[in-house]
Image (cartoon, rainbow, N blue to C red):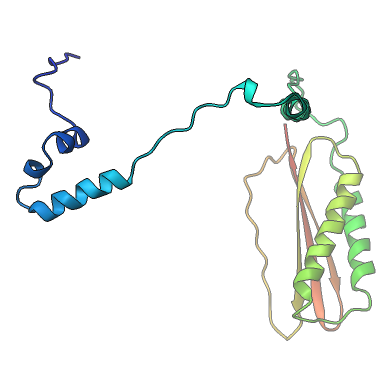
Length: 191
């Protein structure tokens, strides 16, 4: 790329305003030029000087060192392992989810106000129970729905990008006279 000599170069807007503020905006009048000049004066910015080590006392340095050490990213060597040592066993998770649904909802009746918080607590409990089973290299998504029985039909659909060989899902259902509860647990293999 060829560079022009400094005399031939076009001035930037800020340099041109400093050198000839009135000529740049002749059509707009002196009022606009004065306003622009006032804005330029208001927007002065003085950058802060970078902090140097001598500004910190010794006690501050000792407090900051463990913080930096804890932030250090741990690097692991690649294992090149494609299979889990402890594979996801859907029948164990299904039984556990069914037991949790039965225990939590046995004597309950449908209440539209408390259902969202109940769904959240049940899904957290199912998630922790699934994690405690110790399946290796899986991430979980747990969804719980509680729907009132009012003579209506319901269709629940989910879509995933799925690895058929390694990923799996489980559903558990609990039904009473006033509501239906459905729990879905998706286990996605994580390399």
